[in-house]
Length: 323
Ligand code: ADP
Ligand code: TRP
Image (tube, rainbow, N blue to C red; front, side, top):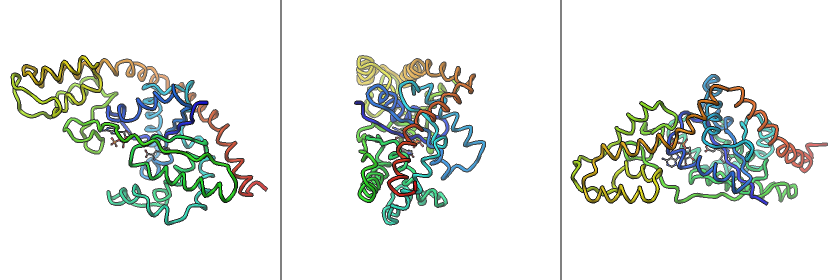
């Protein structure tokens, strides 16, 4: 039996190559090795994004992007969180078993407040919603970055508490923390992140991608100077796309001297264009046919609801809410 793996992705605007190599590529690989549950976490986004037209546009954009990048509805469960309303009912039920102290210890809530986000009840109880996402599908493995690890631990605690109180309804999930996910650098050498404005978009106009790549910050060494590949952002990005021979080739040329940053950028640009071109074509087709995306999402919700409804029914019975 394949393991049940679940992940939610908040719709967050233009995807960049840090998102691709840091997460999306891994999700697409999980489709082959596991029973993947992948959803667009729009109820989570509502904690901070409160603009109807923008929410709608970003949700469809995220769905289109993920489908173009390889999410395959034939091979995984793929849906939008709000199309499965059972999760909100389970959130309430689990909230009643969640000690305040557990929620108050959440780092991510404190970090968000520290960043100036205005607290609301949804932002505070966000880990209870995430717990419901995980438990309602009886997920076994939840791959997350370090920032989300505590939320999966809360899901475990709450599942154990529920099972002790009401009987064994939930599978106890395990976090799968990818410690060594390389931090993909942005054009200024810091972590690539939309909040730093240093991203290389996956689906941007060719001319924008070109300008962004040609604008990668380097030191001021000339063409003939010897260079250390490990101190160069162009090389760090090139490595993601290149074969091992190509990697060694660029590193050697840097060390010997003779490869200028301009040419290295052109080599990187060619790799980016070549790698993402098929995804861009697929995306253009999907974008021209939004009905198809909507149909996929509708089917996806229908398929996953068979599982969520079954779990919720067990919860209703166990708690005595089904009388
Ligand atoms: P951003 O930092 O641009 O706001 P998000 O926080 O929305 O990106 O990240 C979404 C996913 O992409 C997360 O799983 C995160 O780990 C991954 N990710 C984002 N930026 C990077 C990066 N520079 N390197 C590796 N992974 C990244
Ligand atoms: N909270 C996650 C994030 O911000 C997204 C998410 C929502 C999620 N529900 C989930 C991730 C369940 C894993 C499992 O990135």
